[in-house]
Amino acid sequence: MTNEALQHFITERVPGAEVQQGVQFLQAVVPSTKARNLLIDLRNHPETRFDFLFCLTGVDYPPDHMMVVYHLKSTEFGHQLVVKSKIPTRENPETDTVCDIWRTAEFHEREIFDLFGIRFTNHPDLRRLLLTDDWIGYPLRKDYYDPVNMIEY
Image 1 (cartoon, rainbow, N blue to C red):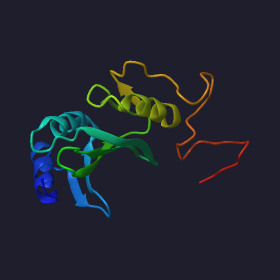
Image 2: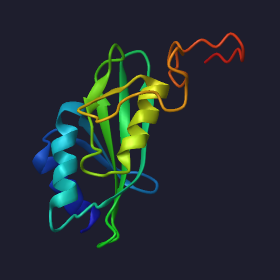
Image 3: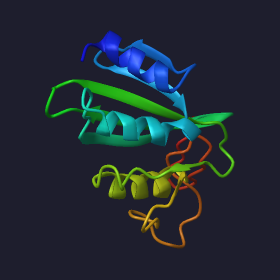
Image 4: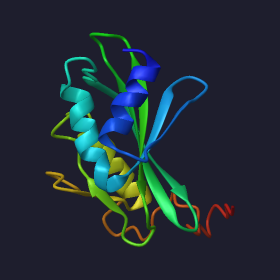
């Protein structure tokens, strides 16, 4: 499937999605409420078959929103795509889990929860992965204050 066909595929399913060619990958920004259904379609559609989630991360965009970024590849067709799920708030951010779509997402989502505080609804085991249970705050957020390392943005 060409990038133009992928763009049409995405905008047909999520009208208003921002799709553009990045330096390396075609990128689509969609509302977090629409991301899961789009990702299911991208995984299951016979012309896309994005069966490999090779990277999943969070991004903090103060002051108003956060994103979860999915890097996808079709091992059958060889095409790649980045889907950015825009969460419209930084206060109690959440989005749906995709670990039932791609098993590799389970630990990635736990890491994002641990470091950014983004909750993944219906995740089977959403708990801290890297930090201790009594850790306060989310170290990869731009507003995180670390008096020991004194890193400020």
